[in-house]
Image 1 (cartoon, helix red, strand yellow):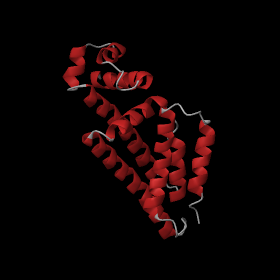
Image 2 (cartoon, one colour):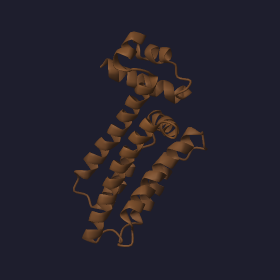
Image 3 (tube, rainbow, N blue to C red):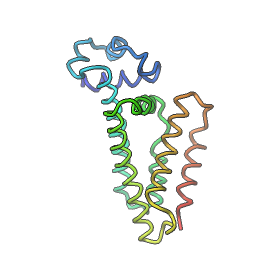
Length: 185
């Protein structure tokens, strides 16, 4: 429970100020805890950021597992996933912060690349299965299409991080669904 409170508080504080400006004192105050509680669960603020990122990625894995278990065809699974993953600024701030740090930190980069590989392999598997069933166009290269889908989501997060003009969530989701629907045979 204490660990989860710290992670939730870190997500909020990082969303408001960014990782570099988020002070440990602010995080523990937001969580209603002490510095001792923070250091009982995490070695440092960087480890707390990784835990928050892991929570975000586990959330996405849960959504993928739920969608994978449906009886939908593979294109519908991809569409359902897009519709199930609304724009969430607090969570995405953690994603953006870890993405920025991944360039300089090999440990964070490794976590990012593992997560990306897992997600993209699921997308590619759905596309290959859809092709085998005759649902997905045969000229679609599964790993390229999977990278396209993940890049669109990550790109949106990066643009949100730099305060690009907002796009209505419903319009963004409808456009992504249109891209995925274009895979259909």
